[in-house]
Amino acid sequence: MFRGIHSRHFVIALLCSIALPAAASNFGFMKNTLPSQLSDSEMQQLKTEINRVLEENPDKKITQWQAPEAKVNVKILPKLSYTEAGNACRRTLLHFSAPQKNPENYGFTICKNTENKWHITQSRLQTLSDTDITLIETHTLQALNDNNIGTPVTWFNAKSKINGTVVLVGAARKNQQHCKTITISLFDADGTSLEGQYLLCKTDSGWKQEGSVNKQ
Image 1 (cartoon, helix red, strand yellow):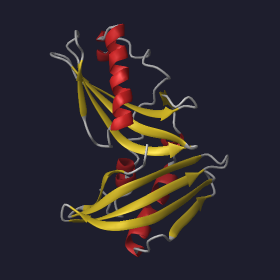
Image 2 (image 1 turned 45 degrees about the vertical axis):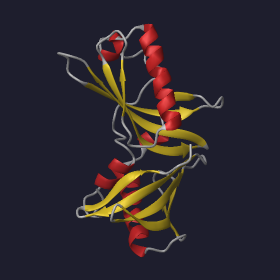
Image 3 (image 1 turned 90 degrees about the vertical axis):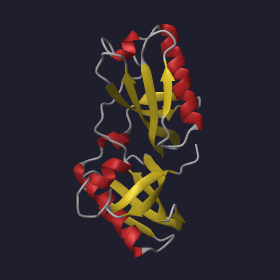
Image 4 (image 1 turned 120 degrees about the horizontal axis):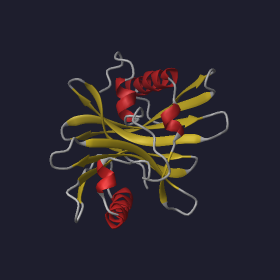
């Protein structure tokens, strides 16, 4: 939710639980966990399904996958789409469950590499400071309130050397709600960019993210 007074709440939701654990470049670190109960064949099938979901499904659509042999169910949830240094990225949550076992949740940033293949990576999105998050929140609220379509709202954090821009792209009604589309762009001192476009709808409790609208 985004009310403009509860610091971080909206941005944390928008940037998709950035405090969730980062991952290595493969699934090998998951020893003694529910993923470790999958056979090599099942793990490959799961990876194939994750790739299909990332290619075809929009944000916030849950896909369920059942291991053919192990009694493990996996829910795949792409939460946030954006581009980093020109490459498509999707922050994705995996929920593992099995009978008589505690469920396990994992968060991954999965980006396309130079060969156009999805791989787990450490994104700069996960290293934003509290100040950067507050600045994103403040200027996003300003862009929503000013209602000036196409007019950039910009800032610079001298400590992190991050430039930020929010642009209101358009407004419309969806399911009887007043909604707006915004673009958020961040650039660090090395010129690396983080960019995403999001649909926000006004609710009784404030602005709520309805999804990412990036083209994959």
